[in-house]
Image (tube, rainbow, N blue to C red; front, side, top):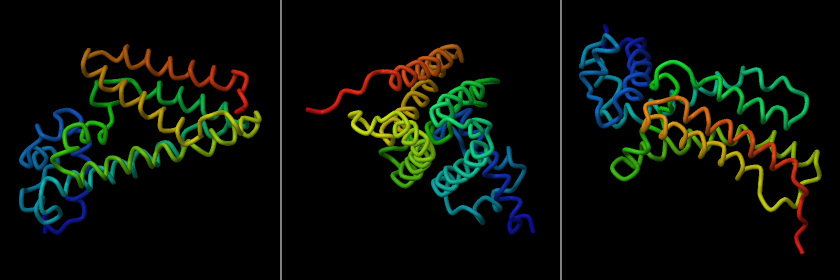
Length: 206
């Protein structure tokens, strides 16, 4: 019964978010995932044909989990689109609490290890990161439109992706230094950059 229980799959995916962020994808074994989830190895292979299949599913599960978190976050309540963008960055800063595995990114962790060895996981991680960036682009575009920045020399999509570049880099530095403070500094710099970007005079193309 356990092997066929949908609860076993949910437990494995939930455990993957924690264990992989703690130990990395390569350092995580199927046995460890099963132990953390409290399910049998038979249950694992009933739901996932391989560890790689679990990794792909975990990336999608992470997107669903974080998507719900950000969809209900308070930064959406601001009337001005630029205020929403800046409040999004503030919200990301607020999430930098607890132990390092609690605030780092599952897909960012996995893609660093698997970009050459497991292209399917790489693609799932890319879809997750890019998909989240796309949720920011409409507010960035609205802020640009409100300020007449139609010829800014950059796009809403490129700035949205840049926010994710900074955040993922902040997570890497936090791991390297074993300290959240460097990540907080990076997010603070990101907010300063976006604030300055929208307060600079727009240079019209010749």
